[in-house]
View 1 (cartoon, rainbow, N blue to C red):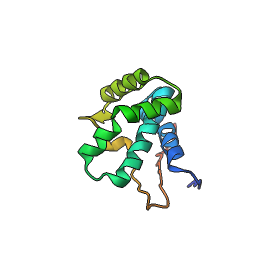
View 2 (view 1 turned 30 degrees about the vertical axis):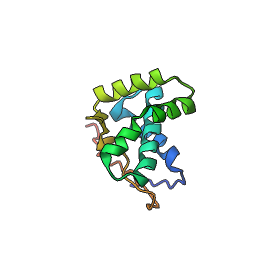
View 3 (view 1 turned 90 degrees about the horizontal axis):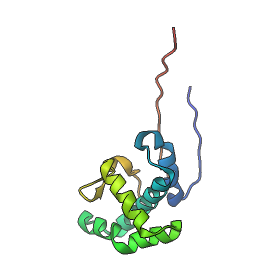
View 4 (view 1 turned 180 degrees about the horizontal axis):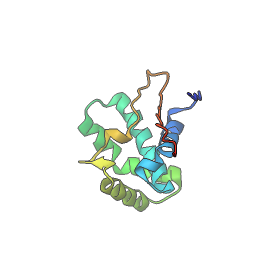
Length: 125
């Protein structure tokens, strides 16, 4: 049996929902999820114009980006720095880049993004 839910969602909200849905895998605290969602959103926006990954990540992890995220969330930049340390320890940030496993793969040209879970049911005997 399949259950399909169609939703209209802006990319910024999709990153937050993506992290909510995948929370059992990354096990981030809510505040860390909020920071990562905005990092993913900024990554998505920057990737539209910057094709060189070295430059993209330099801009993504720049003070100005961290400051913008901190302002939007109403936190100070030290909280961002602490979250980045957590992300490194959990393998979300590797060699100063976001792990591809955490980045939903879609572009501005895409009209839909699908998340598919396949549950293999094991019934008790």
